[in-house]
Amino acid sequence: MIEGYVARESVTAGERLALHVSTDAREFRVRFYRLGEHLQFMAESGAFPGVLKEPPPHPDGVAGSASPAVDWEFPQYHFETPEEWPPGIYLAHLVPGDAARADAVPRLGDGDVEGFEREFFVVRPRRPGAHGRILYKKSTFTRHAYNRSDSADAQRAASLYDNPVYGDGTDGGRRGHKLSMRRPGGVIDLAYWDAPFVAWLERCGYAVEYCTDLDLHQDPELLAPYDLLLSVGHDEYWSAAMREHTAAHLAAGGNVAFLSANTCWWRVHLTDGDTAFVSDTDHHVAGVFPHLPATDLWWAAPPEGVGEPEDALTGVSFRNGGMWPSTEWPGDRPRDGYRVQHADHWVYAGTGLRDGSDGGPVDALGAGTPLIGYECDGAAFAYDGNGVARATGADGAPGSFLILGIHVLSPVHDDFHHPKWGHWNCVEREPGATGPRAATMGVHTVPGGGTVFTAGTTDWPVVCGREEDAGVVRVTRNVLDRLSRRADRPSGPGPTAGP
Image 1: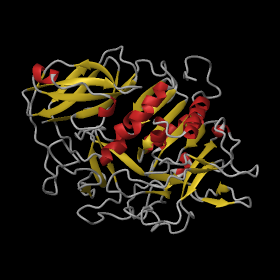
Image 2: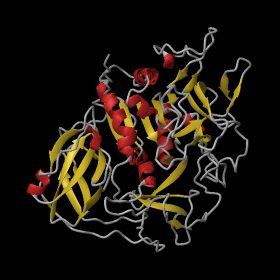
Image 3: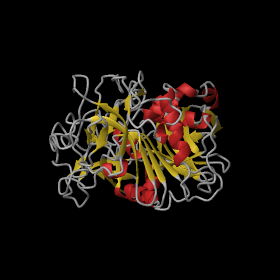
Image 4: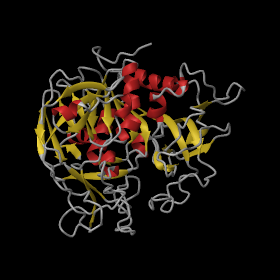
């Protein structure tokens, strides 16, 4: 048995990486890989002495579970990362046993990213922006919210969604559910959303650097060297500082592409020296809501929420979209794609898609693929006299938000979860206020010149990364090629794209 986590999920090349590992083996080694066009083996550590540390018990006495709210305090080990390691997302594979046993364990391949006995981390360059001006933000806060702290040998079900720990604030701490970022749990989301898209980026020749949510939270100057920030996959949990720094980037002429959904839904507050966070959400504790309304919902007006709708940043919101239930995550869903609007927009250049304005049929972007979902965001909209969906701004979306693709989630059938399911804060709190729900792709500009593209669906990077639809791939390339250099940026190193 072996499991572990990193003390911090990002490190600058040449710096020391701190690993926390618990194992019943007398010794273990760590193999390091970099995600790219292929999973690339980078190095193997020497032998570390093994120490077994039991997980902390759940404070509410939940049998078979462990606490998601505290540092698990596994023994710490260090690895000096080479200065020459390129920027990227790296995988640490924990291999228990002596040299002979380790030699018998085959190296991981492209299909082996997901699993236990693994942890990921980001390597950042010594000179930010020197490699490229696209910054890929790995959504680590969301990863921790869903991390159940399971292992290959134990189902601990300890997360924000499974046996969460809630504090009412009477002890002087912040009220809400608390999660430590120093827990094991293996790799799931990285394999699903990030690995295929990172491989595609490198296959196409895009020069990309990487960061984590914590990096964006802590450093107000993080985005200064970059022209384009990427939010990828499932990006649900944001701090106020993350929003502030992203908004400043846009106001300074930088760009953002949200190739994600359920984006910026809950606010988090960093605690414990930025190794944990608290969020007052509507998740059940022992079958009951500990506190309603849950006040860290971004869109809801105070005192029932933050009062800063995510739509103001992204143009869309999960409350106007939804999700699919499934016993087999992420589940199946409709494959109709996005109904194309404004086909003459630069986003659609070279796709050959039509919007019907020439009297021909209206095309659908991503038709035949599971592009819409498994969670999706939408804008409040209404149809004009020509049947074109236009954003109303009733949900806080910017006036410049242009709907380029739409998939109406109606009728709501048995296989579709609208936000009321599992989230008391959605349509029960705002019945009918923003109209029908629809997955929405669009674009808007902000004062200062920055541009925001939003895909409106979590699985955009999956469909693009696997090249399941030529239109989605071309739209993605159009977005990256146009937004990866802000208009006022002087010439210099920038992204390189293949044919």
